[in-house]
Each structure stands twice: as structure tokens, then as C-alpha cells.
Length: 74
Image 1: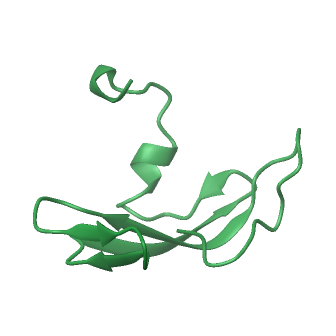
Image 2 (image 1 turned 60 degrees about the vertical axis):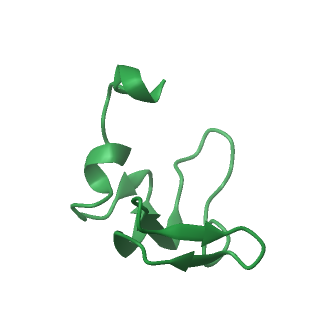
């Protein structure tokens, strides 16, 4: 969930987003769609993307920087 709008969001330019709240849910967690409240997240991190490069965070970087999407996510 974005905490604020993108600093750079222009066609043909690299993406810059700051303070992105990234939450991973498992079977114990839930999301209230009305209030946008996340209950019992499995993991949570505030991350940033600067000129299309994510911060060095183990939770998010491997997924954002991969070159091939696994077949079970297509």
C-alpha cells in the first residue's frame, strides 16, 4: 500500500516510489477491504523504489528484481 504518490510516474522514465508498505499474508492473516486494515500479517516492511531499483530488503527485492515469473504465478 502506498503511503504517498509516486515521486516519478511518467511514461518512459524510471519509477520512483518512497515508503511503500508491503505486507505478506498467510492463512492466519486477513485484510479488511473496507478499512484497509491488515490483521496478523506474516511479514511487513516499508520499502522504496528509486529509479526502478528496490531497496535491499530480503522480503521484496528478490520478487521485484526477478527476470522470469514462476509458472504458478501466471
